[in-house]
Image 1 (tube, one colour):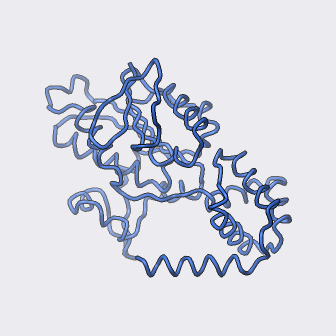
Image 2: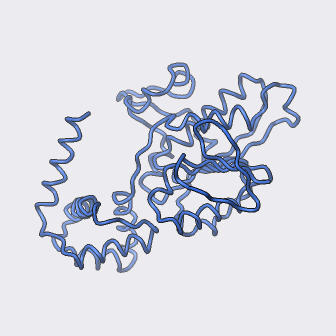
Length: 295
């Protein structure tokens, strides 16, 4: 793993060395554009991250001047298309299957029927929103956990999961539902056998039944209030707020709770929001999670 990290760092330095140094004004211009369009504010210490990824995309598109590429990003339909590609490189998509098992345990142990006798409605309906879903590992992990639980309980159910992210490239991976062997190593073998099909090239395809339960949609957290969706039983927003300043975090969370059904639960990553309170919400204690329930 360390060898791969060193190699990646060498490649990043090589890419950035092929272009002139980005001066202070240019860096301010690029970070302002990123914040304006995504709400993400990059500090000076992340200069190399921005420069490396801008340079990488410039090289792919044949640009050699920062200003020329910046002007292209801000002009016409072609600029909008290119921005969709660039933003994929400038936003972090670190994710993996079963990354937040505590969140899935909360859902299955506290929000779903524990015995068949508790399934008052048939089918039992449950709606989830995965915010900042990246390439789909989180919503598929939730879908697997819920299906496994409801199958063991013996309840017929309907599950709808909306998965949203700003990157159309990441969403395309999620819709396809094909992952490398390395990606599925963290999944229990019985789940791999049940929910995946091995492909001829050594990858793994999510089952059609699971894919049909997850709807991937492009969404910018700056425009969450415009999402045309109904009320959700659970909203999962983990490892997304850390990329925003405190006022933006509060605005995002206050918008998300508008989409919660009565007694719906909002699950955040531990430490992402401190001393937050809302008159319509109450803490929902569960080990290794930061969760709130709508009153």
